[in-house]
Amino acid sequence: MTSAAPPDDDHGVPVSVKIRERVKAARQRFHSNDNIAEFIQPGELEKLLDEVAEKMQGVLDAMVIDTENDHNTADTARRVAKMYIKEVFNGRYVKGPSVTEFPNAEHLNELMIVGPITVRSACSHHFCPVIGKIWIGVMPNEHTNVIGLSKYARLAEWIMGRPQIQEEAVVQLADLIQEKTQPDGLALVMEASHYCMAWRGVKDMNSKMINSVMRGVFLKDPNLRREFLSLIPRQP
Image (spheres, rainbow, N blue to C red):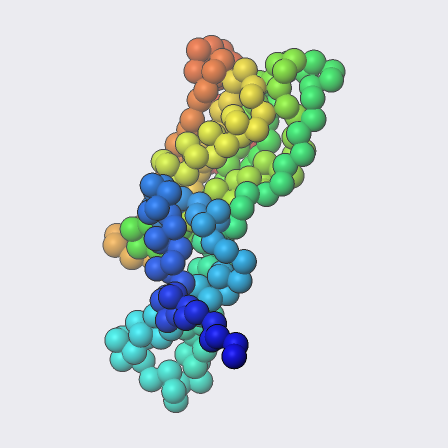
C-alpha cells in the first residue's frame, strides 16, 4: 500500500510571509529600497502579485468604492498590484541587469559624462512619483572597466525602481557604478520633481530637488568638479 505524501507545511501560508522569513533567516534588511530578488523562488512573483491584488481590493473596499458596479475600478486592484510588482517597484524583486565589462584597452583617462538619463521612482513616504534626470561623470584609469552607455541607464532604472528618497537613491547608484567600473573618480547629479510636494501638501508644481555624489578625484580636485558641473546642460 502506497503511503500518502507528507502534508505541505507551507500550505496556506502567504507567499509574502515565506519570502520575509527567508530574508530574516539570512539576517538581511528588507527596507523599501532594498533588492530582495535572491529570496524569491521561481513562480513566487506571480503569487506575490496575486496577494497584493487581494490586499489592494481591501483598500478599495475600505475607501467605499463600489468596484462591483463601477466599470472604471472593476479591475483596479490587480492593475495597481501589477504596476507595483512588475513595473514601478520592479527593482526590488528582480536581479540586476547583466552588464558586460570591457578592459580599458586604450588607457582612456579623460572625463566622460553620460546623461541626462530620465529616471522614474517613487517616494517611500507617500508612494508618489519622483521623476527626473541623472548625469553621471566618470574619470577612468587604465584599470577601469568600460561598460556600454546604455548600461548606465539600465543600472539607474534598476536602482530607481523602488520606493525611496532621492538622497539615498543616488548613493546606491553611485555605489553600484563604482563597483562595476572602479574609476579614479565618479560624480552623479540628480534633479527631480517630487509629486508628494506637487500633487499633495503645498502643491508646488515648480520646485525640484537637486543633489550630488562626488567620489575620488571629483571630491579632491575642485577644478575637475567645476568642469563636470559646467558641462551639464541643465535647463534653468
